[in-house]
Length: 301
Image (cartoon, rainbow, N blue to C red; front, side, top):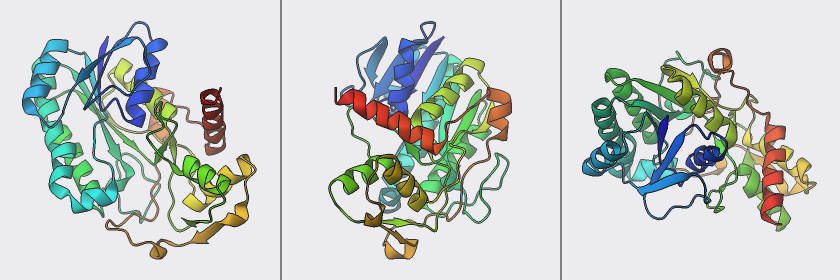
C-alpha cells in the first residue's frame, strides 16, 4: 500500500510517518509546507501546499497513493476566529482539492476532524450525535465533514480531542509539557476546571488512523483518549507524576481568560465503535504521561 500524509510536519503527521519504520509493507510519502521536520526514516518527503489546487493535483497524480490521510489544518481556535478566510482556505477549500484528486486516482481519503463541532452541552458524544459548533474553527471542520459526506470519494472521518505528545523538533507545546516546564521554572499557573475533554495521546491517534487506512474502513470514527478530565485535573496528574509543587497550580474557571473563540464546556468522545470495529485501545492519561516522560528522557541522552 502507498500512503500519502498531508501536514506531516505536525504532531500527528510526525507520529504517522514514524510508523514507516515498523510497517515495511507500506510506502510512506510525507508532505508538508517548507522543510521536512520529521526524523530521518524509510519514507519520501515532498513539498505540498494543500491550498493550491494545481499542486495537489500534480503531486497526487505523480505519486498515485492508495490512501491519503489529511492532517493539514489550521487548528489555532482563536486564530481561526480572527483569520476566517485563511481558516476556510486551509480547512475546507484544501479538502475540496484533495477530494477532486482522490476521486481522479481512486484513492481512499481520511479526514481529521474535532470535538469542537459540538456545543458541549451533552458530551461525551457518539459518532451520530448532532453537531452544533460554537467557533469558526468548529464551523470549518463541520463544513469539511459535510463536504466529504456529500462527495463520492471513498472516505473516513476521524474525530479527535486535545491531542498531546512530543514532536521530534519540540515545536508543539501541549498541556503536559506546559505544566511540567512552568512548574520546574517556579511559575504559578492558572488552569481551568469547568471544561471537560478526553485528551488523546498522539501515538494512539496515529495507530487508529493507520488501522482505518489498512482496512479502508468507511464512515465516522471517534478516536480519542478514554479519560474525561478537566485541564485542571490534567495539570494535577502531570504535577504528581513529575513530583512537582501542586500548590503552584491555581484552579480557575473559563471566565478568567479572554479568548476570541467560544469553547464548548463538556465534549469528549464515546469510543465504542472504534473499540469494536478497529480494536482501538487508547492509553489512559496517566499512561500517556509516562510515555511522554520516557520520550523526553531519550531525547536528553
